[in-house]
Amino acid sequence: MVGYHVAIAGATGAVGAEFLQLLETRDFPLASLKLLASERSVGKKIRFKNQDLTVEELKEDSFKGVDIAFFSAGGSRSRQFGPIAAEAGAVVIDNSSAFRMDPEVPLIVPEVNPDDAVTHHGIIANPNCSTIILLMALAPLHRRWPVRRVVVSTYQAVSGAGASGIVELEKQNRAHLAGESIVREVFPHQIANNLFSHNTAIDDSGYNEEERKMVKETRKILHEPNLAVTATCIRVPIARAHSESVNLEFADQRPTVAEATEALAAFPGVIVIDDRERNIFPMPLDASGRDEVFVGRIREDISHPNALDMFLSGDQILKGAALNGFQIAQLLIDRNAVKGAR
Image 1: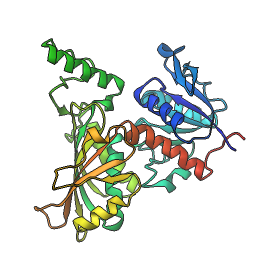
Image 2: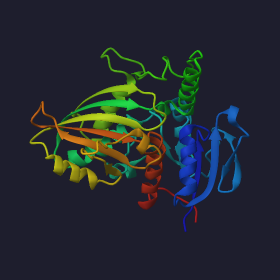
Image 3: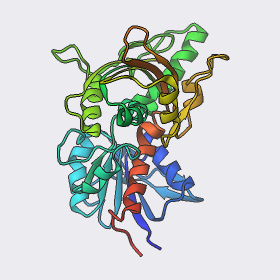
């Protein structure tokens, strides 16, 4: 049996912790595991499969003998150490934005474009969390009924800012209930009892970085460079799981609600929740901790003869990040596209 030597760069962060959980609880042929983080976390003990693993410093020589390196340490660390890891022989699965738009780096959602993964040259990019959740609902419809235009509005949980975002929401909620002053450290505005435009840089077009990611990444993954996509990204006071309101305009006649529902329900990793009678639709509370993306509110757009509306919820840390990366590794193993130790 082949086993794989794995490293996690950014092992002490929210996504790194999820990679650890997946490696511990899922069927993965692991030969060894190395935990890497910044200097301030060196020496920290993390429990894994009834043993304590010691966190090591992420350095240039960290990847000797590593087959698969999961990176979730931020874009600057990925740009610095990703090529070094690949040069050492590891396949880098990077969760940052560092390589996503590099034409030489595959950008992969395994259910959507698995064949692109095997063309890698040592680095594979994990898409933005909101893009992954969108593509899980867009791809099965676009394949059968080509989409001309995508309009998406996101409701993004604080987990998108990492573990510190969750802590800030919890602290502000407690302070609000106690009548104490609200302290802002992670986000530019109070997040408890509030929502605001995603706090990334806005360019001359008026779009912020998160919105630009969704536009560019969707086109790259679908191999549709001219697909019309527009996004509005909003941070909301939810701990975990992003939601999205999506409007799709089809190039020809739109599918019926029944046809769209059937196509979505048949797509791996999607669960349709669309109970109009009881008003039960996708909610981040239900999607949290789940592998699947929930899709519902599937309906004809009454303002446009060729458009449909729907609403999505998906766990940002799982399918939006660590699980998607983990599935990329499994895809490579299944296709014998990564070396391991016997």
